[in-house]
Length: 315
Image 1 (tube, helix red, strand yellow):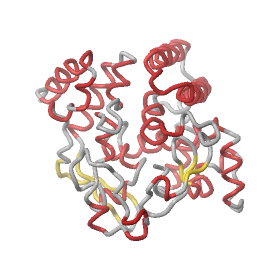
Image 2: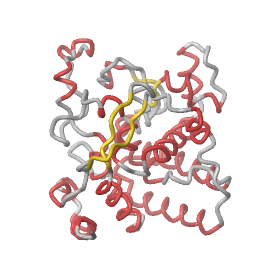
Image 3: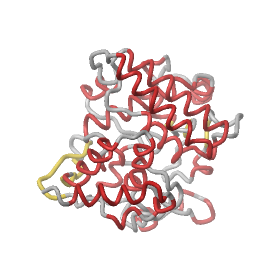
């Protein structure tokens, strides 16, 4: 995630991310809408056990408090929840590990990073940027960072909300590059990762379990993280579209599909250390065949197909 790589960004973008966008405070109707979404997810999220409920409640509490201050206008509870499931569902029901560290050997991280909590933020990102507004000091030893984050789950959720807000601001809300940034945007735009079938695992299997032995070819022959998050895949069929359906946000589904349809290709600019937009088509449009994993949920699959075809034929 934020978890997998270090993304520095411009200072202005950091300011926007640190304050969550600093939009004007929402009215009561917006908070009530968030409450409604929470109840809808809560009623459908029992498959993730009591630990999943704890993570969802943490995300909801933090997001609601932020929304009351006008923060994170581009971050939905659905975004926080789907990333937690994708990154850390296996930790949900392990109380001793839920908010703690995981090593590169455990996560199969391609560059050997240690991550923290269900959203799998990297220790480096916490120390270098995202933890600074919340009391983390850059000079702290890693063990102190682990303990501080473990003991402050709300701060973990705040850092992720900042991260997703920043990505949405810079690359388009819920667009392919914004979501891909959660995992590794530079690697994807440079062709280092995500060049295999989109639904392959995004984590190559290290020879003998040793990440240092991964070859460039192994890393490239991996799946497309952003698309897996959006539409679901075999490892997690409940993607972002599914959770937007659960919360009754048909408009949000359409908006995401249009963003993917219209996305221009981006390339990595080594000079600025960021992805830059080109005039070339990105070819990210979602098609009915991409909904193969959501077929497990017949109640929404037909509706998704209808919406996908509608968006494809709008022009």
